[in-house]
Image (cartoon, rainbow, N blue to C red; front, side):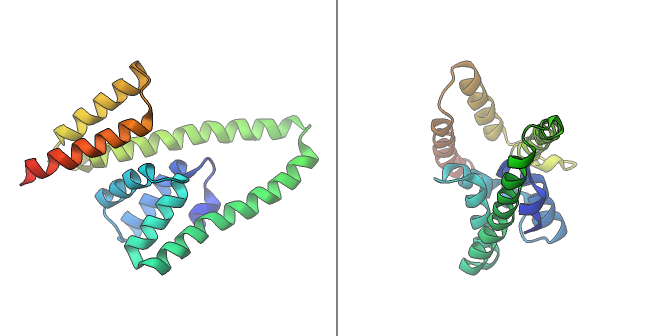
Length: 176
């Protein structure tokens, strides 16, 4: 519930807090498991944060955990947004409100960048551990997807599906 209260900007902005809580503080999941859940959450229909919360809760304690994690993540922001909407109606003409949201948006960009670095680190660079091995296939898929997304403007959903399919075919060959 704390993560739902403390984040602004959607599910991706919560990832550093979630990872710190469930990987470092509580030890419920590994960084690799979090990266896997992020991938599954991105490919699943529906909002990322809802999917992510559900999958983490399911992984930790099953169906009751999925229900509690989802509710705990969604309920506080819903209450806060409703309260802010009422407040915003009263102060919308004040210039201070616009400045506050501009600062919050700048903070969100920073948090999203940190989240991207953490995901890249855990999935491609072996978590930046001393002696960690670089996953060459993950690096090639990342670079190819990045190029396809920004050079040729390929649909991100197609990139996720293609990367997942390539990984599902090639990783068993490499490991088996």
